[in-house]
Length: 394
Image 1 (tube, rainbow, N blue to C red):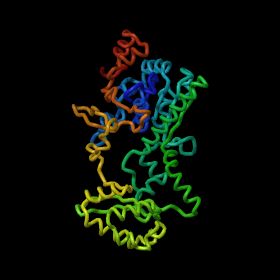
Image 2: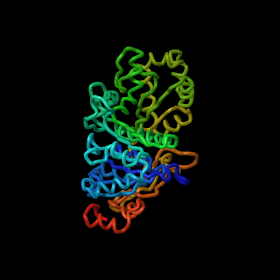
Image 3: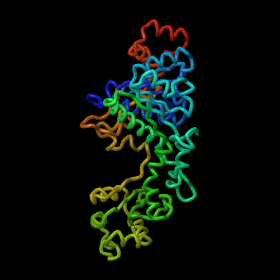
Image 4: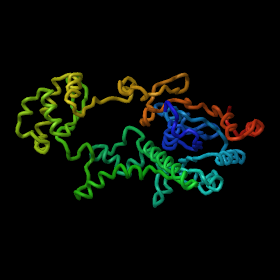
């Protein structure tokens, strides 16, 4: 945010991995919290990923600072315990039982600081599956999300880590709520967010539909259409464009602007309820019409008609998208190896405030001395940790 930050002064220890935990920490960091990314002594594994996954660490760790420490050593545990005393929030998303084996389960952390908000992100809420390990794609398969996304018989993973990011977002929501509650109670609490239940929440509308109709839901590509024109079409220059006509007013404007007088005057197509039963001829007819038009012409007329529409794009197209390049939507981010890039900012505005870069994604142990000093460790204590080989390279 470009002015006073809403969570300024909130101190957070983030012991996390992969995407879900770091996504939660990113949201809180962008909102102004002081987030310390506590990593293994040799750094988080996502620092060493290859290919497209090299983007994980720089995207999910801006506005944080890094502390690489041997969490299995007594001195490392004592250091983190001392930091817990002075922190507001403790975040973890390790596999079931891991944080307890490290000596920082909820009961232990609460005993050290009864005002702390302890957030645990897992695959499952308490229940029959709670001890299972889980991944975003695993949960997409077992929740019905992959079934609903792909064509019948071909379950398909969504094109982003949506459950990791959604679970991290719900965790951040829970943390902020718990911090607000603490103002009244004076006590901390435990917050849990999970992949499976996040996916279940997404499936709620389909579950409700099945409960009402008594009919199992078809995958989205093969679903019964609520609107007659809600499809991808191809242009003369071979671009794909989505057109959605979701009201009869849309239909009238659409036909008028595109000068489709023949279908505008067709009495079989006056209302959406009528058009639904004419899809077998209407959609191919529109497809033929669009094949005679360039994509730029289609997009211009769709904008003029004020109907829902979209050109099918790739993620890389967003770098030059005029909306993404509007003020506050992208932040210049260091990617490592001398590379920088504009990446999406937090998609939230509070008043006229939006998220900015305060700290670039940290190098391993970048600012560790300042971090430890801010938590009350003096120079001799820090040097002792270095001499005992408890900290990673500084």
